[in-house]
Image 1 (cartoon, rainbow, N blue to C red):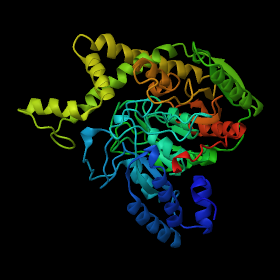
Image 2: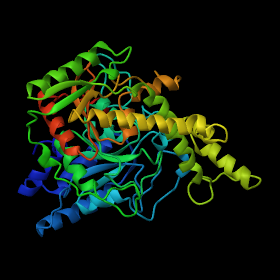
Image 3: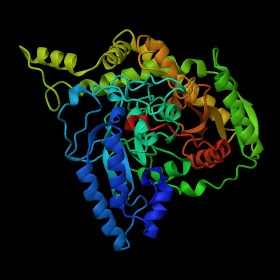
Image 4: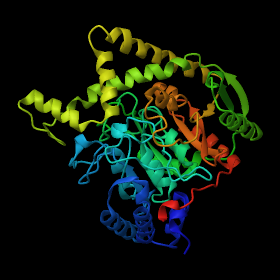
Length: 492
């Protein structure tokens, strides 16, 4: 039997249906791969016994003709999703020992579809970061290496553990969350596909909050088809989430027709930023050529407020974080550091429990919301956000989707940008605008850098038009023909 971990979700689904192998066999192969991938530090909590039990139950359901859409498929879950009876940390010291008594809506939907949980994967603390260097549980390592260079590279963030697990074949797919690019950018850095749905498409209930008006769960996998299969099970209305939109869930996999003739693809001139590397620009042009050859019409568009997106995001997101993270005070759950009185206990717990990046963003957010500064910063940022959303709305009167680079560079080394928060924040320059507008977007691996590292192209769609994003993404994926994989150096 060939290596079961190298199968796509779609291929594994078909193999399970034909009886070529069982979910127990598929899961066992991934448990072995998960154990071998420890040098990547992708997992915070491994749940092999639970996975075997779930796979056994899955095989029994299949034998009775009760297979779900993800029946028997082993997945990794970002440790931001609450999982009943399983440690949930958000990669923060302050949530030490937190074991939820409930299941997030998204993970509950995955289990209802028959999926198997391999474990909880690492991330930037509270999803605050672009490199997975802020986790209390240590850095996640990218399975890719530069040609001729063994130095460790970041996997991107915040969903770096999800990306590293999928790229290293220790999970068939993974959940991620995207606040300003945290699914799409790590997907680009690790040579996989990451899909950020429209805000409100997937429930946020049971997902540890960073910025409530931006956070959106989504799938990460090795192909566009696999992310479409996953999203169909993850999405849907949830009465427990006031931001969840009551709309039917389309057949996302069925959108992959391979035909984009007549579609109009927008190319925003403002994304040709100063300092854009020649290889990213060349890849973008290659993507344009591929879509043109497939029958799409290329249209130059303008998104004039793009340059204000990053500063607006880095006021809005920290402001919402300062409110959301106020609940972590040592009283109800997680870490508690005793003090001489209640206020001292609050201060000591938060000082020890939060990492440097989280503290930085909480200070920025609290400052932006404080008396005298709310109008000058937070309110103004929200007005800019409305302008950015209007730019996209106007553009979509003339185009069906938008093509851009996913990130301004390939993966970089640990510590290369850690001392310069502004340089780190610039990693999100191409992903943040769509997050502010709540739009769906996908990152598709499209080529290799001159150093042999994966590079991604991003497709953005109209609100709740994930079908067109998948449709164009499938054509882009086929044209790119990206089959490169990292060497198995971590296996020793």
